[in-house]
Length: 193
Image 1 (cartoon, rainbow, N blue to C red):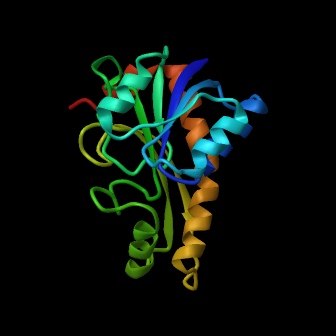
Image 2 (cartoon, rainbow, N blue to C red; image 1 turned 90 degrees about the horizontal axis):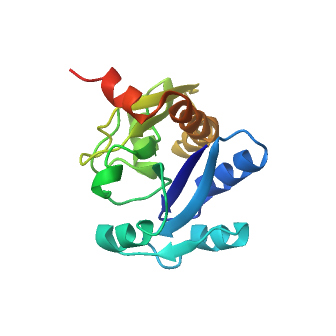
């Protein structure tokens, strides 16, 4: 069972999903702490309602000072819209989800609706999500799991976002379970060149 921190910036929809999957026994993890870089993030309210320690922190130093009080195996970026630098002992243990199939539509500036608008503008017939380990470059770390969704020609960016988020709700917990099963090093070593 992995002990995890959840970092978020917004509504906490991914936190809702984690909480629900943990309650149902479908996610092999325990949430130790939730941190938001936005003071009034709805995700912080939700975390408190669920009974998780919840904090607002600005920047890596404040965030890492809070994390130092918890024993953690992984840190999950759940709609965290800043480039995050973890403490040294957790530098390979940060997991992110991206709303596209990396290496497409990723990198600095590609997040949220920007991704789905770009997918629509290109006329893609598939999209999806990618759960990956994070490093110091946006969307660059080893991929853990990807899920693909079919798109219709008429899908709007909002339609694409809804389809991708449905896939994310399965993919992120599945990926965390894979990390619990195989270990963090497996994924970093599998892509070593």
